[in-house]
Image 1 (spheres, helix red, strand yellow):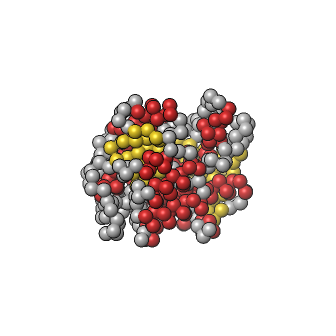
Image 2 (cartoon, rainbow, N blue to C red):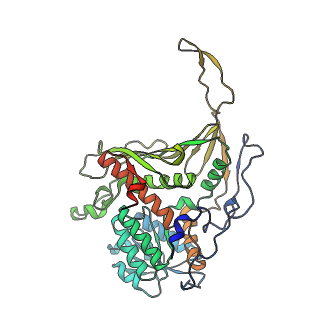
Image 3 (cartoon, rainbow, N blue to C red):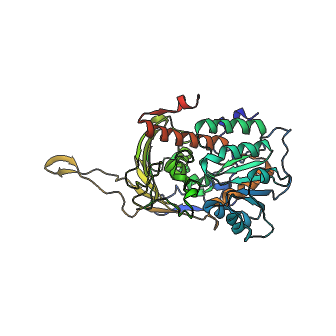
Length: 423
């Protein structure tokens, strides 16, 4: 029924309803970001309901939502779910009772389960939010879709390419909303960046450089050695996609958004070169993706240095955009070229710094974090039957790109999109 989803425009989607304002100081001149327009300032039209007449859409303005997985990320989601005005947060599930007890402190009326099948089978539940270890995403998503529930699943969408493609088939079969937790697709800053790139504000963009760095072992304390793999699941390949899936996936998804397509191929390197503590997933990863038109995207995630943490550099022929978590700065390339003597070479181009101060793009996020907007829109997608901004197609593309990079590093081979999607 949804075979056409892979061809849907990246902007024919349900996006945050709040209108943001964003402007660039100084150099942008009259080419300012649109200050007041339709959703996200991009003039994008929201997609009409795309479901078949046979699909039942919940007519409630506030769907009933259950949370599966109440760890650190899950608890953060619980707080947002509890405070989101268009959601009824009615149940939670975790194998550790102390985790669900923490959630119930938000509201004693939230029902707690220890088995996800029980929560999903509750006839009062309209949709579930899944925030469990990666290897559990597929069975939980499958069970929920087969039970007629809408699904919000944290990134990365699935543990493997095979599972990713199977989830796509299930969404097409059951006709339910599936939203993936790539929350930056609900952050207006990235759509304004895309608009600037598409309009040529920094010239032709052929290079992206992304990093998601930390200086920590990524390890969590374990009260009982028997729980090592349960608690530190990110360290073990049978449960996790490592740094690529847990951290770098955010920026891989952002670059896919900005380019408007998934990568064609990838190569990379990784290793366990510092934290030699029995872990199986790499403590450093580096991948180079190539997109159509010769666009390259360098992606790195390491656990031995946290300088600049999260950062994306977008390199254009006329300028550079430096993207932090909540700020984007444009640095212009020098307009003129000076010739002189450099290191004894006459007639050489004298190195010239770009505009060192840069022009900061200012925006209003409505006082909400990206995940808040994402969960609000999960509700809108359920009640209005509209494709989420981070949907089965975009989530699939990012998941495949993540797993391609991991396979490239493990096998020291180039991985090609056309080959892996034909599995």
